[in-house]
Length: 103
Ligand SMILES: [Cu+2]
Image (cartoon, rainbow, N blue to C red; front, side):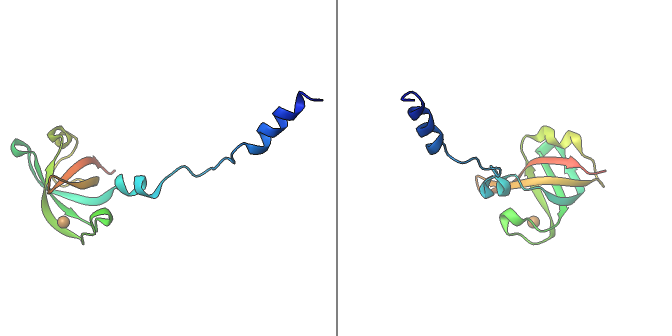
């Protein structure tokens, strides 16, 4: 009987298990936005996107030029594609860090 006591004590202090492990900040950091490719400047690693609201940057819908990092991301898209993309401010420059065409 004596040996059972430490085991019961350990069970009693075991932390509860949480199903939701998604932190809100992580979700915002990887938020994908909607856009349409208007122009690609592969030589300069730039893309012109007509984009919807960018929630993570508090930017309304508009058409604008973004830097693309890494520039190889441009290989996956072409002018006219509807895309999902992620943009963040890197060194003060709006930079696309992920982009993929939507079928
Ligand atoms: Cu914009």
